[in-house]
Length: 239
Image (cartoon, rainbow, N blue to C red):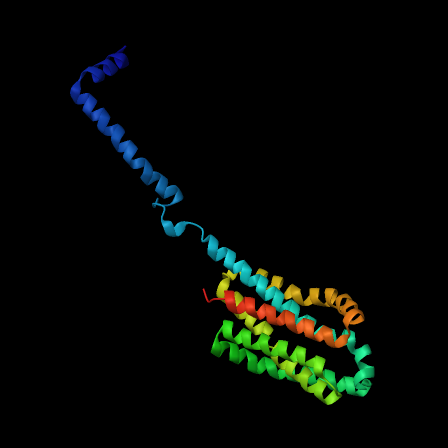
């Protein structure tokens, strides 16, 4: 009865009502502060917080280009090992000369690593990779014009030197476009093109050689490099 009388008195007493309303308002105002202590401060949503859809799409498109570049790069070097049985008769290549041709490619490839990385750093990813891909595509096409082992050796060296720019450029592009927690994934994806080239390339080259001859095979693979170069130059930018 006493508690009931106090409640009734509070409902009818203006002073008591004002005190009660003040207590309720203070509790409501303090609730956001309690929430902020638990889950962090609230902040209004900004336009910059929206997902950068265009940037994300561009990032993965760049990765597609890097994958295709690595695929073409390894197809360019695989084609020689696949077609050498046919080329031996036309260019009079024995085992000793074949060893020299392989050594010319590998020596130039080693030197190319030392030079092309520096070129890509100096010129930037876009221009540096374009030069590398352009030169190796020209070298691949020149294989079709070889009339002697000496000429072929020069073209193999040119190819190896230019192809050394692929991995430095790809890694630099990944660093420019991908956050640190995605760079290993991006590197693994573009590098898978090297293995795919060795799986898909040989049967394709054999079929093309039977249909058009070995010289045409080199022209076709060089054309793929040229098409890739156009896509790269038209779409790549530094973020």
